[in-house]
Length: 164
Image (spheres, rainbow, N blue to C red):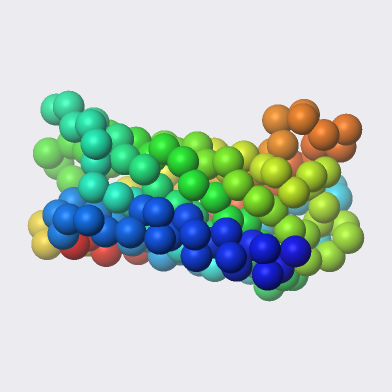
C-alpha cells in the first residue's frame, strides 16, 4: 500500500505540475495528529502544492491543489482537490480546502476505516510583502461514513508558504 501511496503522490504532483510561474505556492507544515480516544497521536510533516488560480474575484482565489502528509507513526495521506483563499489587503488570509485521497495507517490503532479519506482544511495566516506567508491550520480526515467504521482524525499544523 505504501508503494501505491508514493505512486499516487507522484501522479498527483505531475498532474498539477507548474505550467506558468505566477501565483503558485508550496506550503510546508509541521504539527501533530489527534486521533481522539483511539489511535496513537504523533508528529506530522505536511506538504501542499497549489496551482495557479483558475478563478480570482476581489479577495477570493480558487485553485487545484495536491497534498501529502506523513506522521511519525507512519500514517500516510496523499490527495488532491480544490483550495480557496480569502486574502485581505492587511496581509491576513483564510485558507479552505477539500481533498479526497488515500490514507494508509502506520499502526493498527490509527486505521480510519478505509483507504479512501477526505481531508478538509481551515487555516488562518499572514502574507508578507515579499509573497511568502505563515499560517496555522486544522485539518480533518474522514471517509464521510462511506465505510462501516469512520473514526476520523484531526491534525494541527504550523505552515510556511513559498509563492513563486
